Length: 109
Image (cartoon, rainbow, N blue to C red):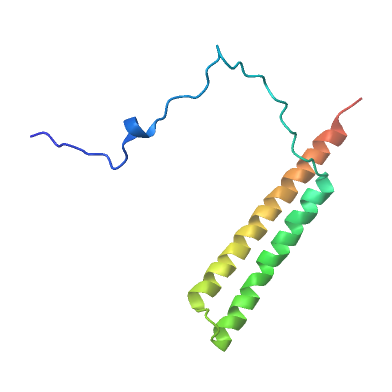
């Protein structure tokens, strides 16, 4: 017995013909705008401020749960778990940054 599968998306009809006709309208490569670069201290500062807000979130959610403002114990546990994961990631990143700094400092010029 053969199962017939009918896809929900009509792939053949959803693919449109390309509109690029190189013989009539040659394309030129346009320069790509480079993304704005930020300093290392800015990146680390943003990460620390985000970690701070993540760590402080369980207190706010717990306060909302106590006062009955739309939060329950599940929301508190989720916020605590997110804060724990954030602290673990920040600890690992700090360790990697310190290891990288030590490797750079050990390079003899």
